[in-house]
Image 1 (spheres, each protein chain N blue to C red):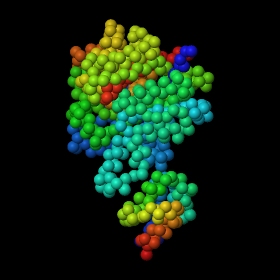
Image 2: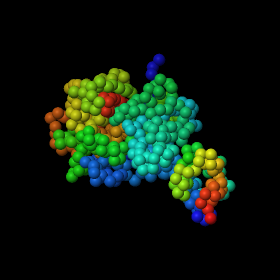
Image 3: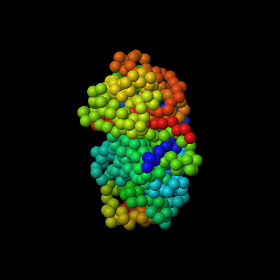
Image 4: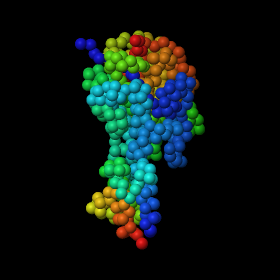
Length: 414
Length: 83
């Protein structure tokens, strides 16, 4: 029996360059820069003073005021993006058997801001005065729980956690549930809101963040020789994955098809990627194998491209390992140049970017690309979107812990 | 503190914490039945009453369990603070 096919029928996004999918896409194709000085807290003691914050987000536009108050910012992003995705797909507990619709939403860290604020209350007022909502605001899986309650979806429901690969693992897990037949539709993706005092300080002391305070608009510069670290971002991306026949029967619009996933680990170092991107290469090869695609079928790779020294050169090496001669025909771009690094949400918003690139034949650029690096010598779609008909594309994400994921997306032709 | 002052503050807390409108906060309104509170909301309300009315952590659990309506809360606070 052939495998059930899995298509994307809805999308929702809250990002530093747009709080809807279409606004996000417009930002991507225009090369919009989402990086600015941090407003969420006072950065006077912090080394890095900028990030890519979500701007003008009003949770009560999507969530009842009382419920919104019980959610951490990461959860508000996820619930808002889910609502947009569910409405976009036109699915509900009526259109589908609710027992066969599930939710998988991950986050790298979860309710980090709530943790920080609560611990301050704890220190000032003691253990009996912290909020009874603290634990349900903190835990990562609560976003999937809220979405299930809101929409009445009773199928498989949990969170994935794998640092910056989280969003892709959520999508990959949802893909497997639909393919296996556990569910006919899945709400899936990632969310992150870690731009807080301890969060920025933590990444700073690791030397992971860019410190280009005097020129922060050009700080996120993946694959450029002058890159000096990543720029923190925040937000959420959520997609609806649906079994193809179910989607066709109800006349759903179809953005693209997910045709393969590849998950590996470096087994090398807690934060640094393996030499030559060895684990990343295996993830890309695994996704191609799962999809039954030859490397030559791929026209675009939405790279992990974090703008760190190690990621960008190792990811480049990994792409060359997998694609050989074809690597120079590929376009590889990092949308993190515009959105910053959304950590646990990165894989999800970048899956949206990849699917729209394939659907619309338009590749988002890598902005801030100025100085070529001999260790990064592919075509990174520098500074301008590229119109190119695509049959298939890959989306890479890698996370601390050595996690590597790759998702293969194919243009859907009815 | 006068009854009016206590009532006003209690109302404000309930409106803020439970996201209800002021007109719903009548003396007989039950937190759970009428105002949609769950067990976690009730814990938070008691904490907020303690903080706002300077009771420290002085509302014992068995007393707190009896604060099921707006009216019973106002009466309890009157007994503690009223004049």
